[in-house]
Length: 463
Image 1 (cartoon, rainbow, N blue to C red):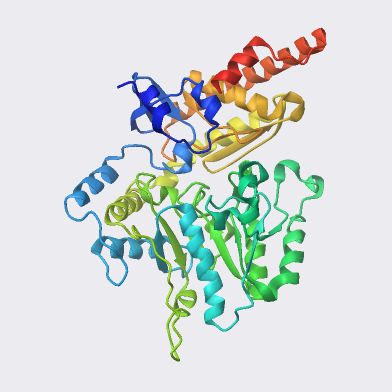
Image 2 (image 1 turned 180 degrees about the vertical axis):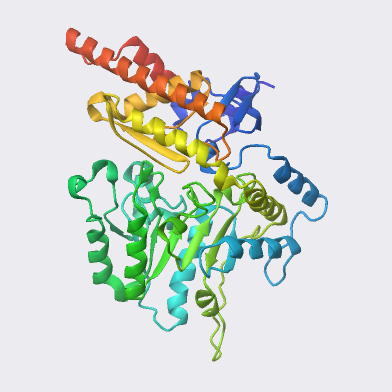
């Protein structure tokens, strides 16, 4: 089979420009192990993005794979509406054991966006259950990303992505987000950026059901890492004003920040937490909404009032996904993954502090096993970032730019030699792409022309 031709005839790729993709010699992956992917030609690629931020434990971990295989011969699917199964019961106990504070009631969904949708409905119905139906609005952060369903799009409307559906989206109230790469208070930062959230929340508390944020890092906005103290202060304010706090830990949970959950870094417990991606090690789709008993108990019917949560997913708590999640949590414990992650985290921290000094890099940062840097406008911004990603792919490293931002999110278990190879390729491509952009700019200035160089045209065709 010619996989590339068949792909182009049938497959619809997410977040992919169709015309550019059809001109690109894209890799077709057929196997993976550890931190490396292998395509149909046998070429290997380092997974610098943990396959969209979810394969925290690396590919083909034998314990997770074996657990799924063994489960597949016992029970493939069983609903959780009005009944249960052994796997989801065990998983729920394990999740309650690692979740922050007293979060101990778990609702399962199929993916991150569906988990957030469920969390929103839980928060809104919680207040309805208590007889306060006026508390129905949601506050989120500008630049937020909580999924691509129409409900979640309203939480973080991004014109570049969502303009075609703007007319049908119910937009949340958005508070100014902390943005440390472009902080107006940089020389005297005392979380003054929190004032915008505080002002909006105090003004709207009586009609607000919940605030939802991505704690310590806004992912799709450009890997915007910000201080945990922001989350701590938000918890205090939500408690004071009687508003639920929802933390979307889909991307940052399960060790990504250096702690099991970003909530732990902030030293707080949300009312509702949403997890996904690495919940199953990234092996099977599953998400979970983890809530307090107080929230859960409000759904008990009384006085002839039906408070049932009429919201469900066919594969809610699926046995195969539950087996993968159980195995992933067992790996976290048996292999002390948080301790393992300290090595790649330290290498990232050191490298990205050095990258910050390269001319053309606006800012650079790292926290746990997530890191990012921004290319300045003068150095080509998003065009240079795209150029860099193209170069990296040719050298065997998979990365994806977010506008002018380039990032590395390696699996938490990345060893020293693999991490050093990733950083070596990343650094070489960064310097080369910046040099090429400077050369192109100098050539255009010399010729007095705005036409791109042949290299730039070729790169555009391949990107």
